[in-house]
Length: 122
Image: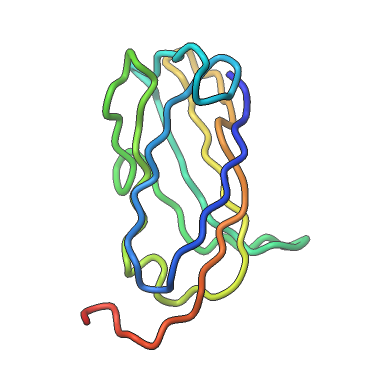
């Protein structure tokens, strides 16, 4: 599995579903890698900088769903509650721990969150 670089931009308070297909070469057209039986999938958003304070963490128990294990597909779902307090640029990263315990970062990049004038429930 290779790392895909993915950058996203959203408004604070918005929901964002991030569909991911894990491929052998890290490209969308690459051969899918099975994630069936994955022990963990973690998606995190953190500040830039040396301290990299984590702002959001999603996992298989909350916010990450395997949608096609043999096809290497999962979705990480940010909710408005996850993003409402964010503003600016953040790093994000997703890591899969496969059925044998091997950990691989499958994508990372920049999440830019624009401030909003609307409340989450509007």
